[in-house]
Structures are given as C-alpha cells and as structure tokens.
Length: 317
Image 1: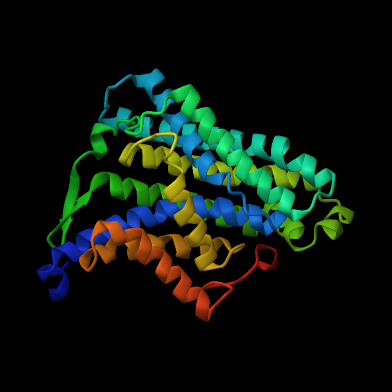
Image 2 (image 1 turned 90 degrees about the horizontal axis):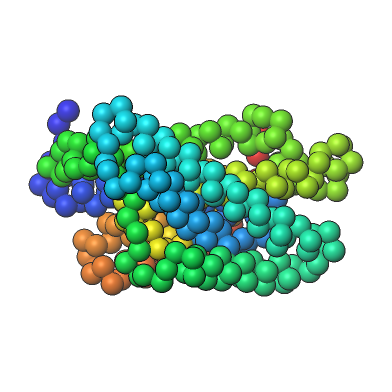
C-alpha cells in the first residue's frame, strides 16, 4: 500500500502519530475509570491515578515472581503478555473495590456533602501514593517491567517511520478492553443497572437494582481498566510511586474533553490528547508538550462546555 506523498516525505509526522495513538489509547483506558465513576456517583475520583499506579506495581511483582528478569519469546511471550494484562486488571480492580468500600461507601450511607467526597478522594490519592513510596521505595527512576522478546524492537515501517511492536500491542489490548467495556455497559444486565443508577439511583433502587453492588462493580470495572493501562505503561516506560500523576491528569482531561460521563467520549478524548501532545513536538519543544494538551482542552471547552460528545452515561441507549 502506497503512502501519501506528504507522509512519505515527512516520516517524523508518521512516527509522532504512531506514538501519539499508543499513548492516547492508554489515556483512554484510564479516562474510562473517571467517566464511569462520575456517571454513577457524580464524583471525580482523584484517587484513580493511584489505582493506575497500583495496577502497575502489582503487575511488576507478579511478573518478577513468575519470570524473574527474563524476557520470553514465542508462545511464552504471548502468555507473559496475557498474564501481565490479567495481573494489572486484578490489582486495579481490587484497589478500586477497596476504595469504594473504605473511602466512599461510608460517606454515601451518611449522605455526606459532595465536598466530603472530593476531600476524601484527594486524601485517598495521597495515601496510596505514600503507601507505595514506603513499601516499594522512593526511587524516582522506578522499576521496569520487561517486555516479552516477541514485542521488543520494531515490527515494520510505515511511510518511512518505524512502528514499534509494543505500540501495536498497546493499541490491540486497549481496543479490546474498550470495546468490551462499551459492550458490557450497553448490552448487559450489569450495564443496564449502571445506566439506571447513573440516571436516577432512587428510582433504580425501587425497580430492584442493588445500588451498593452496582457501584462496587463500577469501581472494579474502572479500576481494572486503569490497572491494565498501568501494566502496559510499566512495560513501555517505568513503574514508580509518582507515575500516576501525569497520565492521570491527562486522562481526566481526556474524560472532560470527550464529555465527562460518556464512555465513547472518554475514548475519543484520550486518543485526541495523545495525538495532540505527540504531534505538537513538530513545532514546540518537549517542555511544552503538556501545555499544548491543556490549551487544546481549554479551547474546546470554551466553545463546547459539555465536551465533544457531551452525553451522560445514564442516557446511553
């Protein structure tokens, strides 16, 4: 397949778009957690970035315990990847579940004001961050989850730009997880319960929906997605107690950009944030990468305050 002349002559563009897509899908995975919880509780779960971080640490220790520092190839490499994704989902889901039970459910049962939820979310975020620092060390360079040999290096070239094998893995895993989540929310009994609680929790309760169970499941689902993103992020970059801040902030921006409370909006927002921050390197230095992303966010919200899609979770058909 031939490439457009512009891309063939400017392979840097292609390289940046590929990298931006890979990062954007990771932001989308994290953003879904924000938008699910907001859709159900009208709560911005600022501790979700630490759920992402804990999922990465859990994956690191599972991988080190199972394989040490080796990087398997072939069929073993595929099993390694599946184990890493499962470990990230498990630890992320468990932390999300614990957060809901310990931090948020007592407030909900006492009918606490929204400000109490916000303060609790920030406190939980700091608690998890410092817990990870104490237990796993404050080494800023962090730990590295080794990539399987089968996905190390470049897979092929596209319009003169190398495409890393692991970028393909990130896109494939992210697309599968996002499509699965969207299907669950739209077409299953659990999804109908989540949407009912998001639209009107009191009426949903009268119709027989178990509110506590639905909210817990929502936190588990969002946490699992964040944990998978943490596992993939740890393989591509590093795992440290500070790793959740930047990706978490960008994922939250992605959720707002797409329309907070909208699953597909979070996906779209994550991909756009990833592309914008990557392609901006053509014109600006890396020091302005984050600035450009947030300027775009502010610019979009000035003209469309509800986000690009702007549809609440409870109104999903």
